[in-house]
Length: 214
Image: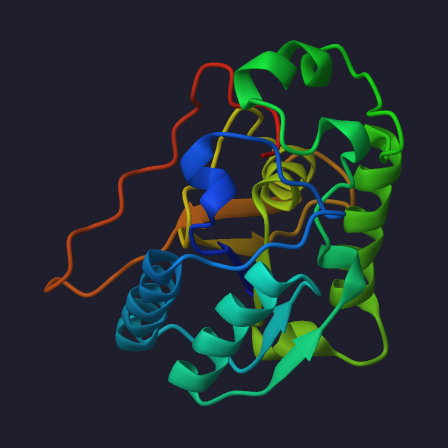
């Protein structure tokens, strides 16, 4: 099968610059640089010639604005889906990433936040509805706009690529394969192929300690 979808992490925020946690229960805007990142990435996607007939963004400002920039640049509709909301981090919001990394690795649940299991189930249920629901949205090869934690679930649980971390406005493509649903290799993930006039994206690589959302 050749159907699939694209995914992009939102543009830069102040919390990204500060290196602190920012969950789905913390709604902050993009920086000016973050908006520009979205514009440049959207233009690269447009020039790549890849089919993308729909943008689906998470509900938070950082993903909604990024999604709006992509939709405008590509000239396609924009939808919102709550399942693309980042994991709620409760009392861990605003804490340094390095401080909290061991807690994520140990599978702890943030006080007042969302468990890893509940978060993963929400995201994967959303993908299942996208891929198999009656609306047939996958036919449009949509671009999903979310945060790093959502990308982590997609990369690890769908494509079997644990430890891979996406940068701000990095675009990847997920292709559904012929393996049984939920089985190894059901989805393949590839970096975006860009025009020769633009520097090529580096291959996705596992980064040490990059198993947690920010």
